[in-house]
Picture 1 (cartoon, rainbow, N blue to C red):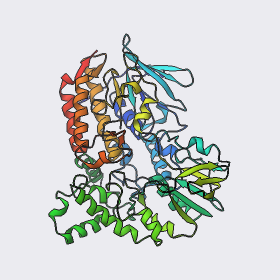
Picture 2 (picture 1 turned 90 degrees about the vertical axis):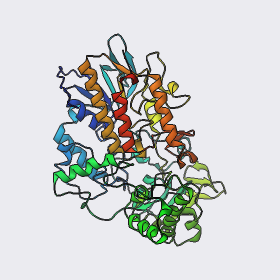
Picture 3 (picture 1 turned 90 degrees about the horizontal axis):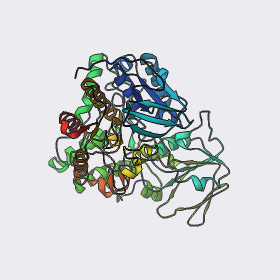
Picture 4 (picture 1 turned 180 degrees about the vertical axis):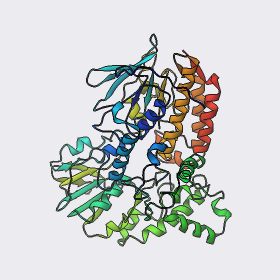
Length: 536
């Protein structure tokens, strides 16, 4: 679509667009909406831009999608940057964010250290009124919520760790100064990707390190190659092609897609050969497997058995082997996002690294100097790290204090189940857009890909509103119900409905699981059918 540029005077308290969050989603929105000539202002609670790459500075933090899958589709940034490694860590991601700022000027349009606490649409003036935690307020015609999927840490252990007199470090609020585990007894509660990275970094350095595991993680090997091949192309043209290819694969990965075959349509020899080929390629083992991975229990078990056979041989102790990589799975492979590791399982061969199985021996209490488990055993700790994840995207959005035209809080609107239009808009919230929100592919895809296609759709929609001279639009209730039916239709056909995880909420799908190519089609079809919207 050819876009018109709308040039208006810049007013810090009354921009055209208010964007919540200065992470990758907010940066992308700022870039594309500025191209329309609109004035934009980002509200960011952190002291700097970068979102997850500002907050997550714990040891070992890195991407789990390789380059160029994990890149924003902003040519001014990626054409002038060379990555040192395919899976960059926190420090390199911070340097890249700074590079983006130099190329497109991000910080000049960001209010740092501000938290949005309320918002409603003023139907008389056709503008969103946004309240901040310092008592100030601002207005904008459009509100773009790009708070991300990991913007608030889980508080599930807060009451327990208050009794602890040692040091408590939350991964998404890690100190900016150096923290050393030398000579310390460390507890890592959780086994998600964050825990995997922390254990790999601190296992060799701590006096002792104990992992408290509720659910095993099907950790896959991080590819060891440097930034070559897919990561660093010799031509800008090839780089663009690879980034563009992300919208053609189900998970939004550059080039990578599943086999166009079912698991048992090939011989055992060919199947094992293919598993072996993709096993050392990180998430490729999940996204480049056979197309019936999440549809056929026997196919899923074949993939799990291969993973287990490769993983179990890395763990010496038989008991720990059965805890970390059980021969009999407790859930379907892939319904919980696998972590990526460089020697995670080998850490448990160290004498100073131990594991507690919380399914059979739960945490009874946290005391001043350690943790007591259900069997009465006391585990001394100097440092406790609750690596138990973050609040889900629904909770992140609800916390913003958004109210609909009738004054109902967003939390009430979703009390009986999530409803959105394409995971981007909501009836009763005119001119408000969500990036990586509920019922979009979100974190069940390659997030930068989801961000890119949604932000471009949002920019096209805003461009249409401006060209038509409209005050505001909102999706119809019927269009939301239609989209909800599609989200559930995909959800019921695969295994995600069988497991409690970040992809579900009280048995409901948190994200759209139909794949990126189909989602792009749904976005295009949704915008083309004007009956999906009401004009205010």
